[in-house]
Amino acid sequence: MREYLLCLLAAAAVTYLLTPLVRAMAIRYGAMAIARDRDVHLLPTPRWGGLAMAGGFIVAVILASNLPLMSTIFQDSKQITALLLSAGIIVVLGLLDDRFGLDAPTKLVGQILAAAVLALKGVTMVWIPVKGIFILDPSTSVLATVLVVLVSINAVNMVDGLDGLAASIGGIGAAAFFAYSYFLSVQNGYQRATLATLVSAALVGMCIGFLPHNWFRARIFMGDTGSMLIGLFMAASSIMLTGQVDPAGLTGGVLLPAFLPIVLPLIILSVPLVDLSLAIIRRTRKGRSPFAPDKEHLHHRLLDLGHGQQRAVLIMSAFTAVVAFGAVSLAFVPFWATGLGVSFGIFALFVWVLNPSDGAKALDSSTTL
Image 1 (cartoon, one colour):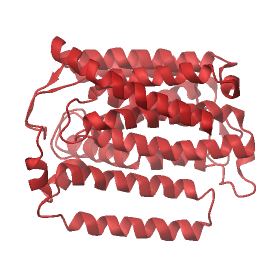
Image 2 (spheres, helix red, strand yellow):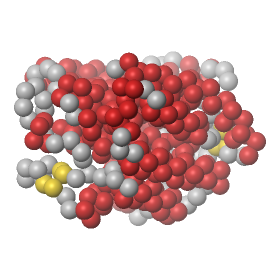
Image 3 (cartoon, one colour):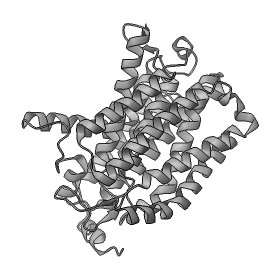
Image 4 (cartoon, one colour):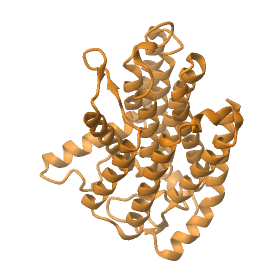
């Protein structure tokens, strides 16, 4: 655990320190988010924050490679290489989009390329829980991996609409996945799960390090560079875990049934996935492209109910924490206790949502830059 904590802290520190430098670079080269009709920010704000987050991740990986107890992760460098190459493509794509505003088809092609590199270089799903355990053939395995990566990237990308929202949800989701992955790798000896644990720990650190600069009112946005990177790392860590561990070994003792490693990433990404699904349904019913932007996302609806930006972020983050850690707790506590706790948490959140504070928006509007 100490080694993972060191990597997490390294990612957080480097991201935090790099962000002001990246902010200055974004201003100099014109990578600015100008307020549009669908946006909630009022002033032009630098993007490219994801570049600092990528720097934090790289330093965490370099540190891990020099820690003796984590050396087993790097004995097979194929997956690490695949992840770094895929992340490099996402970063370049995001930087270009944040600066020049790429169209949706171009972005989709770039995302497919990044996902394909990840899959073809060795990070693939090899089984899914359909009618028992269904082993995927090589072609289907690559296609399934690409699909999972695309959904994860675009889900996080779409939810990135409020200051601190994507970083909060990404950090909480990664922390929950870290807990489950660490439980498997340490308690049950699944060495292949260790890389997933490292990626999750580094992702938590990246989000923590970026949040002080991105919390309302944000001095910098992570941009598509950051949101797509979070989506990629969340998908990659889940694929490394769910596609590599032996499902037959997950059915005994206090562990969950074999399907949980597949379901857990979906639960962790429940808020972005629900937002993505609703957006696709809403836009296609209106005869519009699923990628056409609008102002009807979940965070927009919370703002319409009277919640301020900070309160809306806290609500969506709290919901992510309840369902994500609730799912993870199934590995440690009885089902009835977890169900009772999650139900109480969700009920409390609904009460919170339906009773917005009168001063919430006033607090947001009075906050100084």
